[in-house]
Amino acid sequence: MKLICSYPWDEGTRFAFREMTPQEIENRNLRSQLQAAEQSVAELTIIVSSLMM
Figure 1 (tube, helix red, strand yellow):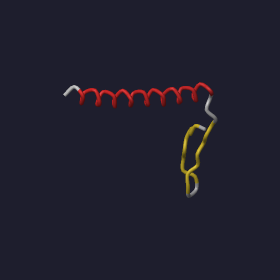
Figure 2: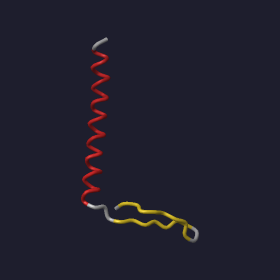
Figure 3: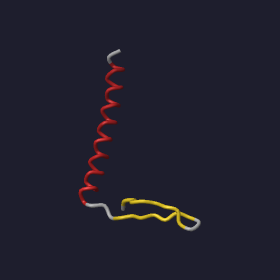
Figure 4: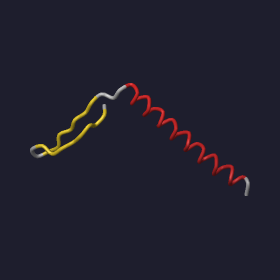
């Protein structure tokens, strides 16, 4: 589900959601994999740079 909007309603908040499209789900998964790869590269960079000292 994807949050479309939220707005005040009476004494609370009302939320509007919709189903994510298959493309949005795939994009979210790819972004997650990319972030994990970037984190791994950053960690490897630290390890290699400490070995070179």
